[in-house]
Length: 441
Image (cartoon, rainbow, N blue to C red):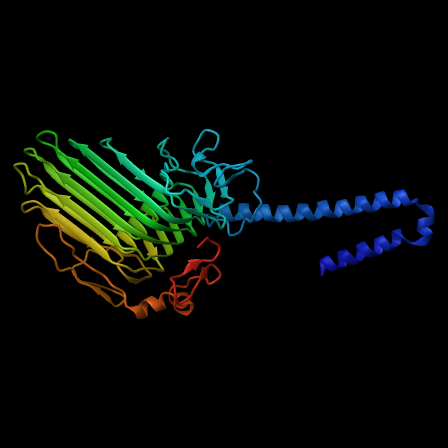
């Protein structure tokens, strides 16, 4: 109505300008100049209002940590545009983290990016620092990223993922057919762990409205170099992040996950401890971690092997944590989420050493916190029964979801009423699991 009134006033004013009496008092040239000036003022005013509204909506969405819903083709001030070729005033994906484009910067993807299975260095790896800025996928995809790292440094934590570590805001990333592999070997006394996920090795910030597909595989092996050594190996692998103590909301993963941890001392008076954590979405969710409105549908395997061939074979401990959604929920929050697929945990300990298998979210629905150590555990009607025992590497659980349940998890009515997901954000159909509307499928 306001716009209509403004239009009428404008037409009346133009009519007034062309009135015969007024025309007698004003030259044709002056008329033309005045009309042009008025039109320019209207255009500038209109552009200013549109830009101000658009810019404030971007800033407001970012400040609350829920990401940008729609940015379009314009770049707001203080943002860097990211494209496949980096031409013009844009940059390439692998330039983030350099001196000119810091990890604290704000970035918006402005085209689909196909890395063509070439080697990619995780963002932040070269400085061993976390990403603290903002990255917005903006409705575009990143496909065929290939991360294959081999580390030999000892007594440290190694990370791998599109982002080495994230403490900032990652929003609407569509990561398709990613391959993330991290292998590490070491000798001698010490503790090492690997943390890897398709989007981030470790998340202490926010990852929202994002998804991944592909494979995530971590393998850690440590052996002894002399007597009297204690060897500890940890591997955390997930479809979105290896470990999470931040927020992962409205996201999903369709990735094959593998975490293999191997401690094998061969010298006298040594101890072996191996721990493997694998989850379709997150390897381990820490006490400060929040997981909300998520799912994972890939297959998950966690393996821990502690074989002591020295004079203390019984001094070995192997623990495998596996979950369709989260391998181990360490008192964090996991809500309104589900997982499907096959989950396997494998352990081996020498002599009479300890070998435990743990299972987090396997299948079905989860609407509250969960930290399971299972012998027989029912999750919303699905029963998982580990049966294998002994000291050799064995599968201890296979989980399945019926076709009826799969259909339910694809339907809008079931998801919106049981999981309370917002139909404005998710697409629902009976041929695929829910997908994000504003992301690249």
